[in-house]
Image 1 (cartoon, rainbow, N blue to C red):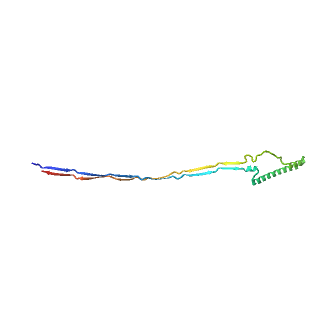
Image 2: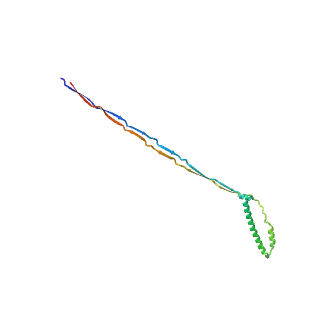
Image 3: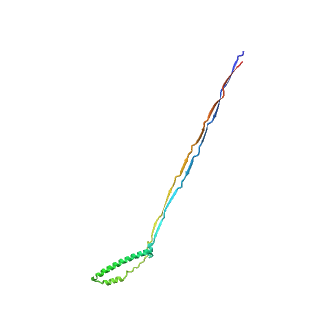
Length: 184
């Protein structure tokens, strides 16, 4: 006798997994930078040296005077001569007032008025040493630098980030099944 048999065929469920990877893109734009260096400024001030030579006294000693000085010296000499003459005449007048005191006043005055001053002779240097006056003022040089700091301007840019997340897709690729057959 034959006993019926049950034959079972089972298929398991199958999953299908598909993935999309994540994507990350990072770009860094370069920063904008400007650098400017202003030129330095230089200011120069100079005081020139000064040399002064005054030789008017040396020329005057050689009797090569300017006309204004000749007139001034002549006026001064005339004034001094006039004062000396007044002094002499006044003194002689006083002597004549006292003639009764005796003495030969008139003869002495005649002799004094007829003679000139005694002449002097000596060796002289024309012009005399150090008659030329020299004066010197040294010059100065002043330099003033004005330095300027560089002008730096930086504009940074943030990085550009693009992110696309990944995905996992799970699908049922095959359904599970159970198939039962009776075999006789």
